[in-house]
Image 1 (cartoon, rainbow, N blue to C red):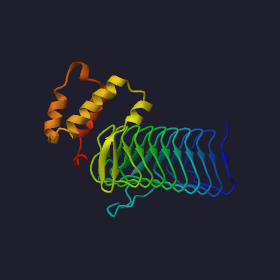
Image 2 (cartoon, rainbow, N blue to C red; image 1 turned 45 degrees about the vertical axis):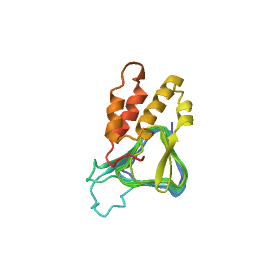
Image 3 (tube, one colour; image 1 turned 120 degrees about the vertical axis):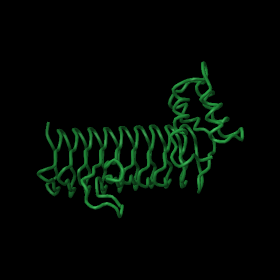
Image 4 (cartoon, helix red, strand yellow; image 1 turned 90 degrees about the horizontal axis):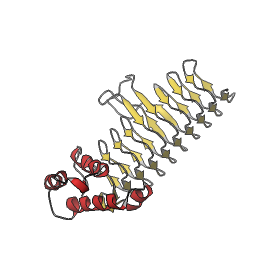
Length: 261
């Protein structure tokens, strides 16, 4: 068990480095950074703190992780970035710490795939098993659920929520909340249907998918208001009730900006 640090890398004495970590040439690890076991950090990476990085992450060259946020209200407060386990963070990705105007932390879950030039701004919360294609960008305070796919150069407006297992097509602009399991596209984005392929990959049963399709029809094809549609969905019992339906309903009831329709 050892740490492999390139001779040109700079690691602050107040940084905490786990076992079997690799740090590439010319990378800088500042104070108040914690790097978990078996994490690989490529060359020319800058990690600033307070930042906590879990185990078995792969951070490629030229990334900026844990820098202070791009928010004029930020005044040097000790906010943080928290990254989970087994994430892949590709070239030129940027992830920034939070602000005291929110919960003072930006949080990223496990097993995510961030392609080149992706950006996670201050106070964002990203779930697990997501894919951010090249150039996908989150403004501040955005929440992204588990299993979400963001296409290349998709842009999410601040304070928006993207529900679990939704898919945002490339070059789409999101200015309202995206309910779970949906597929959206356009600038500004519109709902194009359900993310059926994503549901199949998640191995949802045929009956669950059919229930979700019925719920989609209630919200998007029956000319109901959102409140009327929710009243209909929450009245369903018995065979129509399942955890996935609950996720869909919750992603609408908890919307803070209104949902894309």
